[in-house]
Image (cartoon, rainbow, N blue to C red; front, side, top):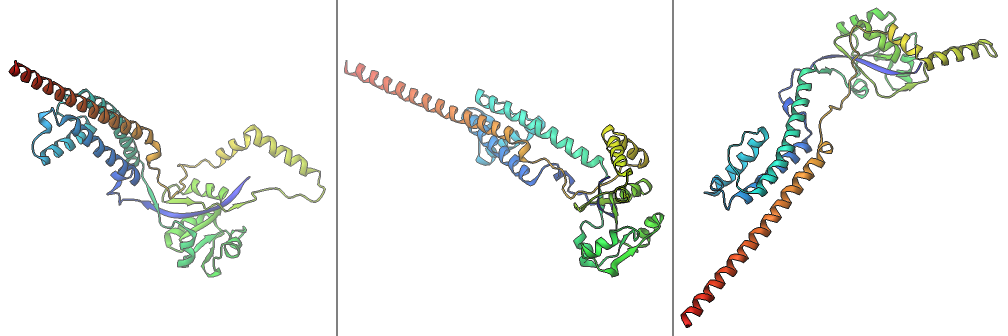
Length: 311
């Protein structure tokens, strides 16, 4: 059975969640979303300004109307009408992107609000060493020696605890700030203490549990074969789940909070930027062509008037 070092520490509910509405997206994602929003606003304003009276007037009114139109489209609450087909194409893609963003944000925020987040009182072994906090361990195992010889804990902070039923009392009385156990004993701990504790692992692996037989013992091969058969058949896993069945789910702490980043939406952003830029360029070409046609038409009319006056 594989084993590794586990650090168990008290935890409490994280009640300081005033800015939780910002957590579903990473800072880069928020910046990119704001940039796409502003870019779409400018393209919509450029396309609608020449022919749409709702996008005319003083500059402040024009920009505020364009910004309000684009922002309200996130909630599909815009009321301003658009007159150009290029604008409709831009908005169709933007609506699709906005739908994906809002649904993803809502799902992430709902998950964060639903799950109760436990905040550990201690997050690293380095803090324990620097603060010289008391730590507990089983003196009958090698963990206490491992803490002093390998992890450089001083002997004065080591609190040996032989009785496994005393772990909770030691935490509640403040005698220890953390408890170091091997992974199988950690599972046994959480079968009794479901709430108020989390396990922190920092990848200190050991060889695991095994059996020792005298040299040239005939039982060694039989035991190894039997254990291998139990592992391959899944019986070992079934017994482990049966014997270590917790009353609640074990809690492992990880410092990284899962948040949606730009790597999940970059394709959508490229799509909306390409569509908006393409419509912008096509609109510029159409405007230039119409201007040239009007100039040629006015030049032809002037020549006709001149010829008639000569005649």
